[in-house]
Image (cartoon, rainbow, N blue to C red; front, side):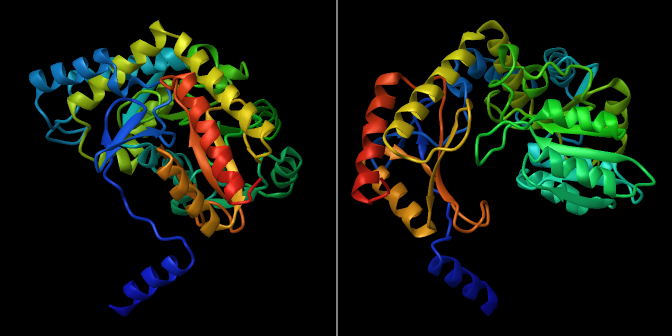
Length: 388
């Protein structure tokens, strides 16, 4: 199969080749590799709860009680008792009537979008939405309209000019994963109400980050009760795996009976569900973790910008350092690894050509002294490579 070899050769030539590296997690923000310890600046473990004693203990207790696998799909035999409590707690935390858990955030977006739209419907999607939203829109049977990133004038224009005999759905990330900026959800909701459209927000990178006690972008903008579909993940601030959707009881009943990625998937193990619930309790009991996360992000962003680096984003813990060329981005990540830092080199097709960047993600578990050393290393390597 020559096309396989040709593809691999081409991505290597363009500095776009990727491969997994098996780091050994040491704690929430450090990993080991080949006998060396590294500071991790590339994880979505925003609150550092993956190594919380309470979270680990809950997972181990659940495995001891329920075993390692669920043994079936949610609608057959896989919906063990821990699911009910987690879904109730997620709905309460998000300020909705109900919630349901999916196996991954990707599967949640695929399932939701294809379930709530049909051939007569129109989906309006931000051009920088996550790949799982893009794939959900592609799989859906309705018409797809892509509006320019966070451009409310353009969204209003396409809402006005696009005929629709069915339903309208506007879908957006709450926090955009590659740029770290926040969607203008308040203005999106206002437009949706003017054009009788549903709004779906992907809060994967907003839960545990924005809003009161990390409740997400809907709470951040004071829009409780005005956003029909709140999607989120258990794999970032909640230190486990899985996705969820929160909304009205009627919506959740509909999703359970309609979303194929929910219906035809084996349920998550009890240990995973228990870990997510314990992390949610930790978040509710320790809202100061959210402030520590935001303080770390603000400190590092200010220092890097002051040094002359082009750092995108706003207040979130996603700090993209814009480089441009894919090869230079890979080289900078390699040099920083020599300095003891693990960072992500983000290149096409994840981002547009010419916009490759180092994507730093911070955690509440990072200590400022370590961040100071990391900042010095980033500035040093940036100067050596003539980025600043």
